[in-house]
Length: 117
Image 1 (cartoon, one colour):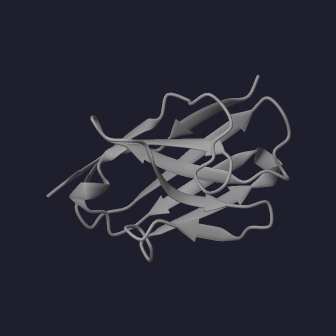
Image 2: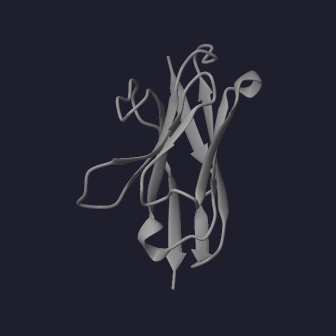
Image 3: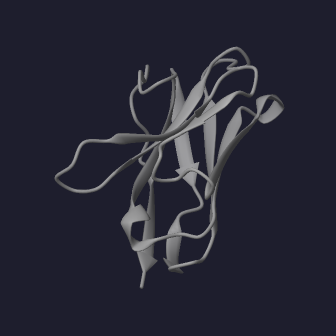
């Protein structure tokens, strides 16, 4: 059974940084793409960034230049470094397998990111 455990969220002032981590379990993911998503109440979950098995990355326009996605295949983990955070980045952040918004598995519990002015 594939599972995701997200961590690293918290409360931060605008302009600050956070580093999110996603621990994936259930099988080997070396040849899978991963994506980070976020969701605020009343809105659809949106793709923030993804990374394919070769390390190629893609970002939503709203986070380009501020967020960096990376992966550690040996540890089955994916990270999201978030810099220059803005209040509009406030959301619950999730990870999943897949590229371009095409997620494959049930969602984990997510990690809350709250950015204050």
